[in-house]
Figure 1 (spheres, rainbow, N blue to C red):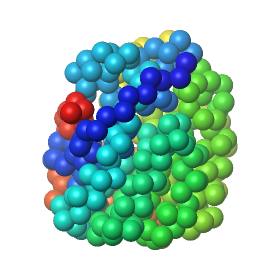
Figure 2: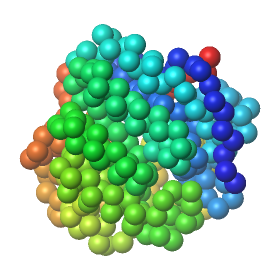
Figure 3: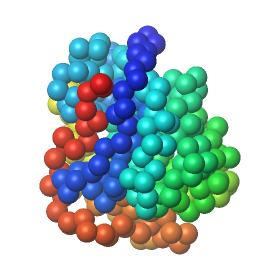
Figure 4: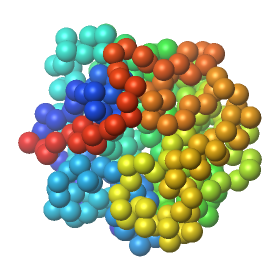
Amino acid sequence: MAPRLITTDTRTLLVRQTRHSFVREIDFTMSPYSGCAFQCGGGTKGDQGYCYVPDLLYGRAERLGGWGNYVEIRKRAADVLAASAERLRGATLFMSATTDPYQPVEAEFRLTRALLETILRKPLAIKWLLISTRSPLVLRDVDLLQEFGARVEVGISIPSDREDVRRTVDPRNPPARRRMEALRALRSAGIPVRLQVSPMMPSTEDFPRAASDSADWTWIDWLAHGRAGGRALFEAMGWQEWLVADHVSARAETWRETLGPARLGVGRPWFAARWDGNRAVRWLGDAPESDVVDNDHYAQGPAR
């Protein structure tokens, strides 16, 4: 079922991150949409899934038909960004913490592309932009991403390379094969890319080698902030051990044997790392080392 589309003239776009945020090393998150058609972890029945975002919306997702069943189109996103030029001077940005900027509606509405164009053409003197997606649609914007040079990095999330796992857990996500192909294409185009194996799930023994061939580096994490329904889904699949950080960390060590220490990051502190051309390097800044996270700081707030 296609999601309900809601057009809004909200000025909600940028959220300043705090010391409690999961992405506290980054200055602002930026979301051209609210809601996400990928409904990660929804399974074949379209259940609530493992995505943490609905828990941050204080019931708003349910009022709009349930997470995965609606997408709000923030039609003024590019104008809001352009008006924030001075505020963003020297800033780092993450697109997006609460939506996928390349979910299917982006093919029609092109808000993500408009944001990239605004940064480049205004221009906005940002320091760095991290883009996270599960969609090969990101390849449409290779021309713009190349203009960013080292000021951009693209992360493509693939929790497992097994198609049976995707069909069971993330059936609305594009096939893993297409996402791996997108990683290789971006890397070949000279764009810094990472593979995001999060939340880590059972995969083939060949996954680390394929990651090594496709991405500059890999970030791995476990289902630390998933919803109760997502945890129940893992348990129903017999994946209880994948809910344990120590198990995922141990699995990550087998990846390190293939990738080497310079091309692997594990856990929250490494999400905001960047590829410097030779290795993944963490943004140190003033961010504390504590991993205590207040997920409320993911929230974009209700549309106005």
